[in-house]
Length: 601
Image (cartoon, rainbow, N blue to C red; front, side, top):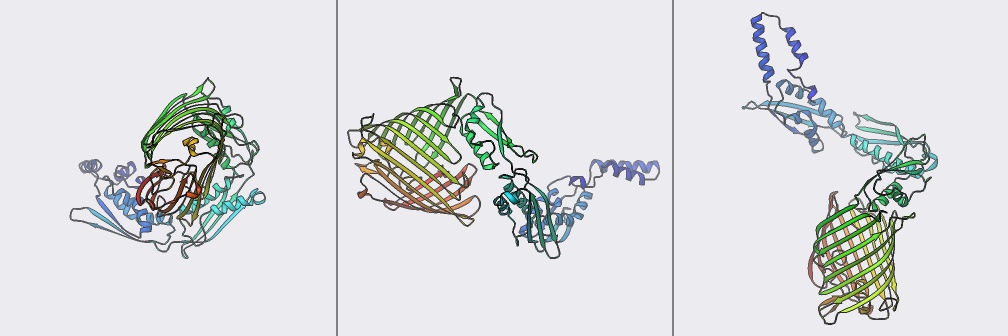
């Protein structure tokens, strides 16, 4: 706006002044001196601005009206102030028209106080807000015959409906959202060929019309990889889930990006595709990566209600044998557990599977029970779009001590399978969908195993949206070890305990189990469940009420359920949902606070 202000130092203005001066040399000298003074010290217009307007437009005027913005400066001349005041009606109309107000009444009053400081008072009646009377969306191109579902998705994404207030930002957002939805599958080259908003200021109605051209169907081709220097580019080819010739789908590109980032080699991944409608078939996928160095050290500190303060760290060397074999040493220390692990993995094979050997040692001290667990084994794992699968063969060697004498030991060689499926609308801020986890394992006595058993575990979390601001969450968990012998013959780390922030709230961490002389021992069977209702008062802040219940037992007929109820606060933080809960255990009659990072997986 500064370019619109009248500036006495402007050469054109100065030239005009000189042309009007026709007098004698002494008078000319006097005028020239006055001009020098004027140029050296222009008059300053110290002023304040008061805006009387409805809340719907007041903040807009405060932030963007030139007269209000320039009040913060100390270099506005009298001429510039007068110009700003004169421009107020036009500027107000231009600004509030973006919010759908086209017939405003504007009054400007300027007063001067005893101290010479001016005050500009603006009174703005924006008039009625324009409403949308009609919305017409037209489609041309292949979408009209190939994929009407994609056309419907674009229509659904257009967020303005008849009767809604018209705003320029809402109009732009609706068009862009519909175009993005159309481009997300098949029609990468889709574009808007015509858009029109017909505004009738007299009747305060708007008729909207947009025409989308889908263009042809795009298919995906081969990878064009750049940025690989330390690690072979075939790693990316091996984790690529997309086959040449597949119909373009942005969700598949997102899956490819996740697959690459799930490997330990790349710090960042960017994927782009050509959108030339003249070459839609097998369009290349441009993958640009930034690699991690061979050696890296990561560490961090934190706090959780269940385990207290913790410190953790890991060292990685990603090119063992000069063949991109990741070697990782990791560890964690907290108030209940000390943990260390060593792993050597291979790069992903041509089907995306990763083979690894590992060993670990864990000491857990909670509920007057100490478990010393040593593990060593091999595993084969793969992560696909929504499903993670792992096969493993692990040797467990556990020792358990408690308040009673004579610690117990148990060993087992355990083949196992684990499977996780995530079918959710958002990986961080979930509103709809479910997460399922299942595990199965067994061991046979005499094969490096003390006692024959089979073990099953499953966990389900289901999210239901209720309107725009409410969510219902259900969680169910079951674990069972099936054997004809006592639980003492099973490695303690394969048995179950419950209680805590992610289990049964209202009870201490892992405090639900077999109580033997004050020690809470793990048992063969566990069942827990939870229901939670969330209401979001704003986009970032919400509240919750919940009911949890669970039991852990060696004998199902002797089960005792432990219920808990509570309330909590929810915050959508930049790093994920933060949950603060206060729960009451109905069985133990105690109140427990919880602070958790509410990522579901």
